[in-house]
Image (spheres, rainbow, N blue to C red):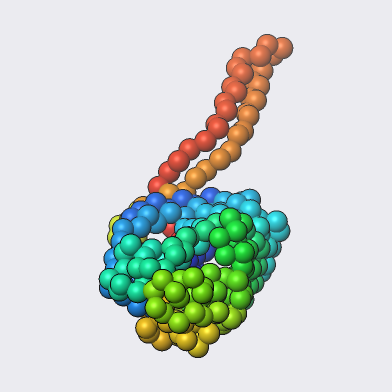
Length: 285
């Protein structure tokens, strides 16, 4: 099964937040993906929807970030993420494609930078394959802007993904041995730029539940479409789901109240609060 790289981008943008409070969102949804690989039918799968925004780290679906520096306009973080892109010949309907080697999803590590302006947010990131499946790396440059229309929030985004030669060749290339087994022509994929657009909508139901939907479209370059593995020039992804929002409070306070009657201590009040998990009903996004 192939899950398009755009799902990573679609997940991250809707849940990116700049609030100072710690926010947690947990839910479930479904992702529909039109795979560019030949022999694949459109597929739908259930997915978890998880995000957390804290003071020092965040979870934005498939990406865990450790914040190195943060200001009103800028955020720089180290990232660890899961790349869901994969190819499983056992799931393919095309006999020739069934003879190819499996391409595995992989773990990535890198850096991400966000810059906030009134007109929107710019994101730049780069991450390398740390499991050595592809021995490649991926970059992303995007801009997105959240618009509020009553309770409905819309976040359009425009961006481009960069796949280096090793990454492209792992997922879209065909080796000489694969060519002999399958009858497909051998192909060495080059580095590629993949532009995409997306639109995310979120609508709160009551105080705690949020409905979300996100659609993304990417235009595949000839470095990818020239591969005999590929039979379409574009890729489309649609995600919908529901999540529950929380605000996490963490504090510790000690109050010492002395009341004196003449020379005698009447009362000593010492209280310690160590934590609370409460539903959050304010703005989120």
